Length: 320
Image (tube, rainbow, N blue to C red; front, side, top):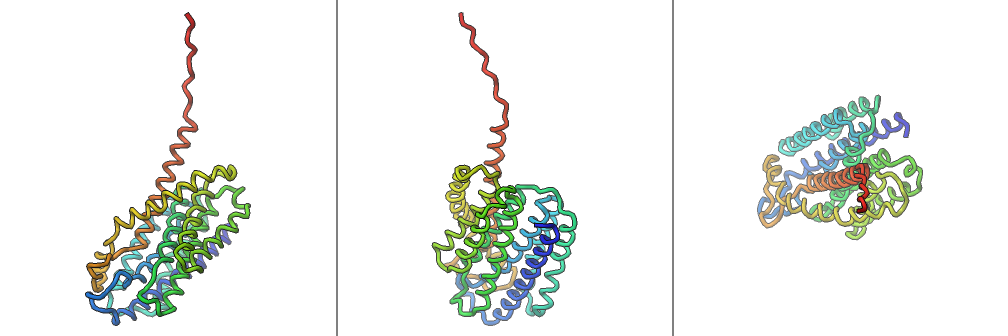
């Protein structure tokens, strides 16, 4: 994709993300007064918080991919995302929030400026940070797709959740397109993987389809980010995804079972019932994605070191 087209696409996605975040903040504020007491709040009471934070992951992932994983540009993106989450918690605590238009304008200005600055002079591609951003977007898309509110009676939040998942998948496949070798980019497999993962994760609301789409999306990053050497070369990374992804997700889920309780307290919201876990599904997905990318990068580094290590010549043994 040409630099101008890439910048224009990133602008459209970050503006859409800002609109989704503003609507979700406003919807959460309107529902705050109808929130039940602390003794009856279940684990799904604050699921919109994870949708809002998923929007933050969309913008951060897009900016990292657009900046080609450059560290000097990636660090401000991460710090800005943390600040955005702090603003989100503050608005969650406030008694009144601005309108959707005001929230969207304020939220859209920083990422739009960042896209224009980064897109003007894209740096040299750094493969691992770009791959890690794509992996995090994919794992977060799966986590957001699995969220369900209490009863899911209002169609508005369900549409917002679906739109957030679609944006996360778009950011993830943008990272795949950035790191994939030129030969892979021309293969029809990219045109098949992207819509297949979107249909399985977004359209089909079923656990089997969700898992299949998850492995397809995460596997796309893991396989297509490697130099293409044919179908046999994809077996090892696919096995790593099939084993490593569920294991890391399970471990991170256990480690963050009650990570949402401090955030719930900071937001001044009623605590979740002690019988339920107050999880931050977005944080769990981000940490699992980073861990998956880190271990995969370590495997690649070790394999490259072994491949390029000079072999010690064997001295012939003297025959007596």
